[in-house]
Amino acid sequence: MTETILILGGTKEAAALAADLIRDHPDWRVVTSLAGRTREPKPVAGEVRIGGFGGAEGLADYMRAQHVTRLIDATHPFATTISQNAKRAAQQAGVRLETRMRPPWRREPGDKWIEVASLEEARDAIPAGSRVLLALGRQHIAPFADRPDVHFVVRMVDPPETPLALPDHDLVIGLPGAVAKEEAALLIKHRVTHIVCRNSGGSGAYAKIEAARALGLPVIMVNRQET
Image (cartoon, rainbow, N blue to C red; front, side):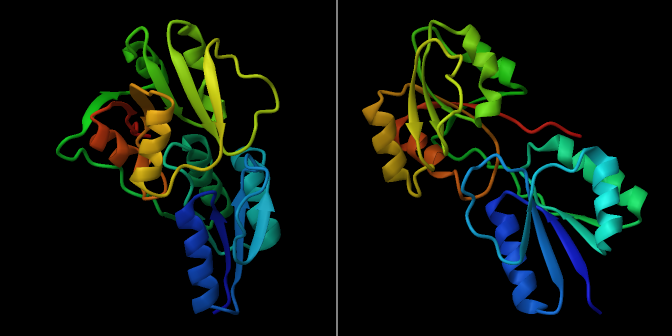
């Protein structure tokens, strides 16, 4: 039976899923939706749609208009708004919903994690005078502008369109290092004393956790919240 699959993507796992579906079911239509935050996203197999839908109602309307038969939520584990919209839209449109959520990282021997529940708690957990790798998307750094006593190292895939609000920071443009050795070199170069990140899980950004473990650096880890 021919299907039209809509994947809510933007993750490494979503891209792999699209490729697998097209390989195994060449007669299916596979559409991957990307939020559009990255200027030059990596190629994805099948069709690609960029941009928002306009909430749950807009997503439901799109699925009806495109005759979507299955919706797969493979978004970032912290993309709670789109995941909530996906649940409501699937109910409204009568479309089967599957959720592909990668598991969180688990603390390993040697990890020095300070686990917190929010970005605000992460901000408050940073000791004064620290040098912090802020491994967050640009839309999540605003709470840290209240810490002029901290030097931040901010890594982004694309240069910001406007200056960052952080009072004291270095900006690093590029993807995370693929292996711990690369991440450790970055941490040493910028004399980083702490890392702030979210527990995203997966392998794509885990090298910094391994590097922190090897260097004995504390990681202020924002845990996932139940939705």
